[in-house]
Length: 613
Image (cartoon, rainbow, N blue to C red; front, side):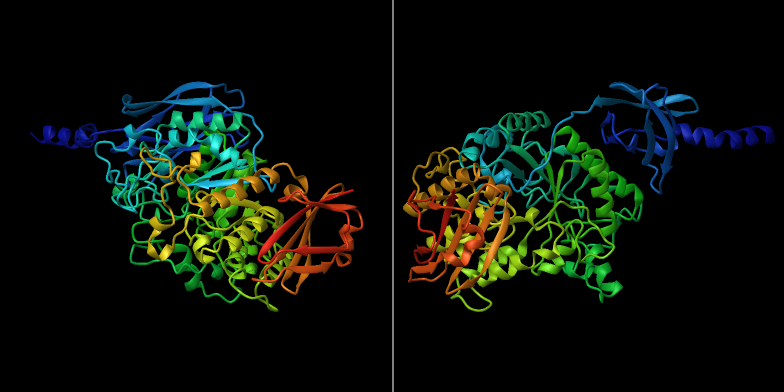
């Protein structure tokens, strides 16, 4: 009797182990590539009690380095080395108990796609929100089980725009002179409310099915590249959604930061502030963005590697030309620098843009790569969002000129470019998906609006055009984000107005549309504006003059901000450039003048001259 009891006791652990259910639900990243500079890849494995298994890999393609087990037995992280001799193909990862296979995943290695990447000041970028641009396939508007269905009557609901809708209107986008498209995130956002915008990921590796399929996205990218259109994708590493799949079963207590009751201060300036308290820094970097967007802990090395590999995966898979990193200042700065370094190691010519939403130039400049004001810190970013310049657009044309206001706002903004690593790479814009529409801010004054367009398309920087601005879409952010993210007219069957075909538009909408189209396509052919140097002169008498120039060409831009009076001025003040040229042609009227000593420009206007030798 005693012997039987002892035998049962000895066998109990093994019986218990075999009685446990073993499952395999996810492997992320789901595949990888041979030929990466960094040969190592770390796989997140998720499934019921998967950490209690032994991992067995027999392959001549990879070396199994180690596994990391965390508090939650439903996760294990596998570190693999892709061998230098590896070729594209598959190998099996076996999860075993006492030599018996309980689960298996066939992992695929692909060949890399070698291509030139990147965008630059030579480009004109079209920013669009996929859900609000065009509904090319109504059949994918809803799926069984999704937490939010399509409802166009709800300004904050999903409206049905998709990948096919974008594909169908590439001709239109190019007709405006655009050379690149920046998409708001298209990863799965399966959340009950505000599911359309893309910034609340529930799966970092999946295209939201209401936008379409992964295959449709990849075809769109191929079609764009065939047209010489560049592809820029939004990514979000600061937060995910509370409905993200892992939030139901976190790997560890430190996978995310703090709690929904501890919100960020939104004061990004504390990162650069030499006197900032540690508590202020912690609150900013570790607080949740909003209560349904958990703050990801990038100081957890497993989380950090997960996010970095995710961006490498999307970059290689979808042949990205650039990444726009949402809320770039909010994750830990050391992590963001490490992310940029890893991305550049694999894709040296890709362009990295950080959203640096701050009102003042020194704080914005701190986050630009190689910034002279950042001390020992280097973000390694190529571009930052130039919100200070946007605030100049917001105020300048609503004011009478003065020592510090009106066109002087542009002068003082550009005069501080020495604070940036490379201000020519600053991403400039009149409006975007988070702020008031500039036409509303400019009191719906078409003259002021056209002045903003002219400066955006001729000043230094990489100009971004937010969809709808070409027909002066209006809206205030305080009325809800739906007011500044309206459906593009003509993108849905039955729309009374169709901007794609210029049908049903108001006269002012047509005026702005034609002006945008003319300047956008002119910019596409003018190397001085695309890549030339910038030279400006202190504003005088409501007139602000600047030049874009190369060794062989130049453009002169004259801003007259006076509401009523035309301005006549002596061109000899600008002989620094004009002495090299014999004529100036107004690009809007086509009128050419040979006298470069006398200029007359209309009230409340921007006049652009191409200079000739």
